[in-house]
Length: 372
Image (cartoon, rainbow, N blue to C red; front, top):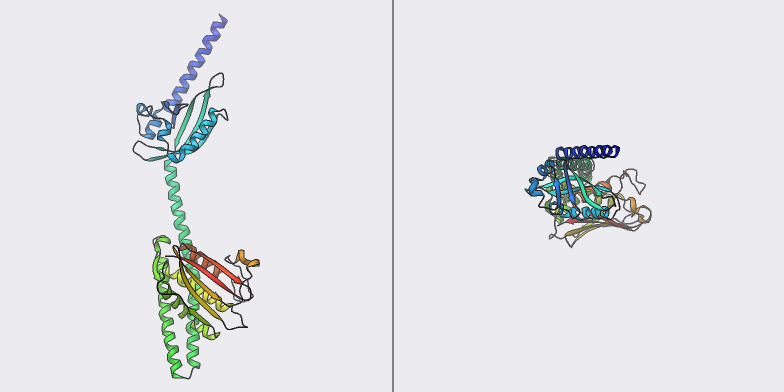
């Protein structure tokens, strides 16, 4: 009698346990399924049917492999095979399923394996949590962060252009006016007056470009415009004429008219002006300054080269820091270590890159890769 009572008690516990599992399985807020070792759905609950858009009967005609995004399938199969071979009892992963309407469903999948008394695998129990709304929120957040970073980059560049480029413009105009006061020959005064006119025109264009930077509604990459590189270089040279005259330096523009590049005009002006003023600032006093500007096409880029015969940079000592913020390599009192950092930032914002070659006390060459 005692044996029969214990057997009946055990059967009752099993029945209650089965009933509890069935209730938890069917009414769970997350998708649940019993899956055969070959991936065939054996049983599915209503939450999983709703999640994937199929009726229970329709789902049972599929394997989970058929509803899994192909990019996630190998990872899932690898985890399944590990369980079958006895290397663990469960796994969890993020994966994508296909809804009946073709929509991609992002989910957290938790799988445990059920074994018999001989430890042989029988089937899997899967729990599937739909996180599609979280993924969409994450994508929106990433978009907001991208826009925020984009705006921060614009503000950083805007501030540099205002402080550096406009100061260069005003300095250029002031020096030209001083030269006019000191110049007695009418011909030279007329030439200087034309330089003042050109410098004022260039200043007006720079202000227009600055307005474009702060009013852009697209991303930086969408704001690229096709410009003639020789024209941009010549305009930058207009802004340093007085500086070159003051130090008795010479700049040769060998960029041909054929080179059209996709740039943000304000950034391009800033890049060339920064490289030119650096060449003037760090000239070698033992020889006459000579700057040479060239360009050539290479694959999908135009490579703009600005070379000088100035003091150069010791790349063995400073090569890894040359484009870093607040890094200076000369004893000039006005060196702040921000110009080349901003220049690199501007070049990369337009999808290009910048490199430098230099020999200390011989000179430097900056090569700027610009998109065609």
